[in-house]
Image 1: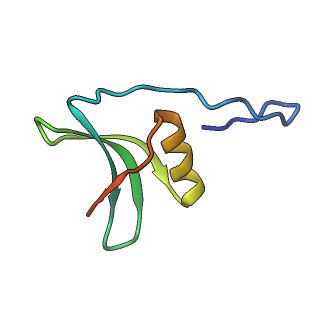
Image 2: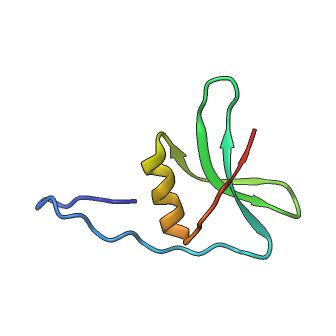
Length: 76
């Protein structure tokens, strides 16, 4: 995520990696209240690993940039 120091200068996004063989990037969406959570689903066990809460398109873009993703599938 973007953080600001006392001088209001934005620090660069920290690039992170994930297991591309065993995990799939997912945007988990609630049909009840519209909440969205970005994270990774383990393809073997089906467990979801939450990374961040997505409030708007900017948050989703930050998630994509952090992990070098072009597209994130939605799951309801």
